Image (cartoon, rainbow, N blue to C red):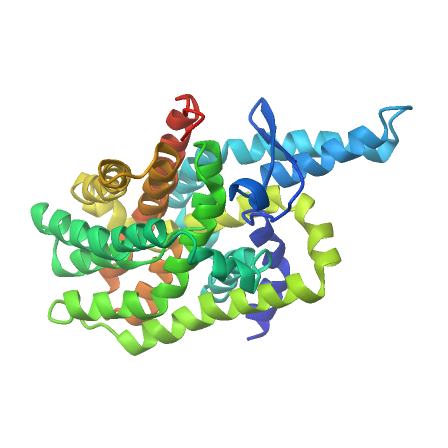
Length: 391
């Protein structure tokens, strides 16, 4: 318990690196070398996205303040930090690959990242949504019912079915099949908000969708696992529901409370979180992979390919199904990334705690890597494909 509390204190700032902010004023966004200015959520239902835009926005404000005179030492240091954080966050897929390689080569490197720290890190990332949410944001869901419902059905309808079919098609053993279905049955990941911004999607809608699937996981994940896997491997559905409440619902509630009563503290921490957020996420990836390194290597491409296809095909279907049913380009891109990018680290924790078969946690560990790479790939490709103004 002490470890959990200590880890929470250390890792809570990491959550802020993935947290979108709400503001009615124009916000400067900086992704890579491209800087643009557009109104945020209040006017076009889009939000600025952390970590890049928040750190960059703060840096730009400091630069403006010093424009009429010599820049202070603090301003110069902060600008250097912002550029470094920008570069580090943009290279997130590369860090994911490097940490994965280390975890496979020498798993003992991440022995220090115990279950308590793993759980605390996940809770911290869930807190990332809570610190920027208000009750009004849940009201906004009702203004986009068709989009949210479409993505919700993709997340908890199409993806679990696709995971089950791929597992069967590749002849995965019962434990691996169970792990595949679990990956398909969990909520969307918080990193999808960042990738949505890079892909020129609707960030505000992305946050609403992530929130909807995250809260929905409390009921949908245990229900789907029990229904689809009850006869395959032992599944503790009640335990899954309990863990989801602890790791998902509670942090969101705490975050919303902090946002309401301590906004200055939250605002002060946000600009310094990008690098910490990337490091925290990479540790989650590496820890998950390290714990099942031998089974991952043993399973080979027979497991890698179906997990990759789950995220890739999920993203493709998540784009074209909305597109063919009348949704615009921006919303279709948003739904594609939301569908493709699952909260795989959370799936790993659930498999570790509540699945009777040890091997069931392996697909989630593999998914952590492919999810990040697939989402980043979609985001980068779409970033260079223009969106019509009326979209």
